[in-house]
Length: 104
Image (cartoon, rainbow, N blue to C red; front, top):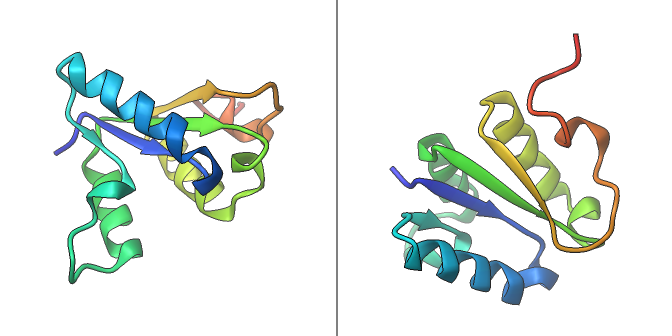
């Protein structure tokens, strides 16, 4: 089980790498899609990694707010109440992902 799963848009790869490296240096076990082993399908690994993570960091940017993959991953993190949004650009995310719990 990873401590942290990082979700990001491809265009933000360098920032995701910096985040993963910084968190790893602090002793956290970080999963991001650079660790998909040969022979495993992308979507199966993502689903498994999200299911095992204790926290999901979503890097919100102009690219990620438009990414169906990022929004899908964020929705799962939100439903599990492990979502931590991180704004790497001044953008408004889709409203459900700002809240840690659904509005009542």
